[in-house]
Image (tube, rainbow over all chains, first blue to last red; front, side, top):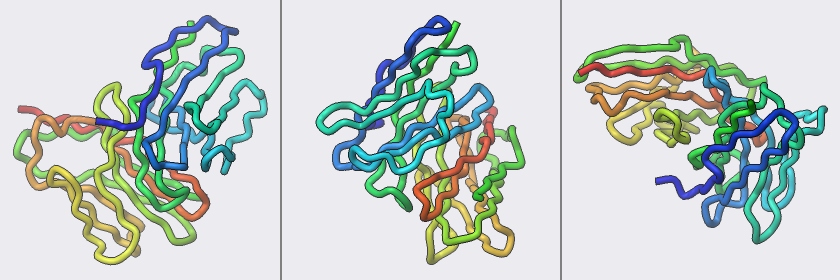
Length: 114
Length: 112
């Protein structure tokens, strides 16, 4: 059973609505990744953190996506104004190190934008 | 740029058969290679990983994979599959740049 906790498992939003997903990494894992998995199983790396700092992120040029990992709070990924193309499974994973280590995934948050 | 190619989108076998799921990669530096399994609608679970040393890596549930630098491959194998092995399998490659790239997955269907 995954020790990475993602909530909610499902969320349904209308176009233009805000969508927020949360992730509690496995205890002792300072590195957190967010991936978007589309209906064709394709993975898109979004962002990763080490503790509270961003390590790498895609060019979120539309600025609709934002993420943070505050201390003593769950990490979060937020879409400011959802679009139909954002419908996907959002996977959070944590790791002991930023590279070379196994990723431990949560069960994902499935976003459906109607 | 790292790329991961899983040439077979779907593989169907019968219970008890052996199976090989193919993975080829391209990367210009030192890398580590992994396989993950995803059951329908769930998160990914780690199967095994190679970084250095013995090119044959043993994983959970009888899975193993063999790294080949000359072929740029890291194929996953199992000698005798069970119906519960039906899932999507992802090959992943990571380097020193904090990024991990996933292939598009191979859907394995094990028929009784």
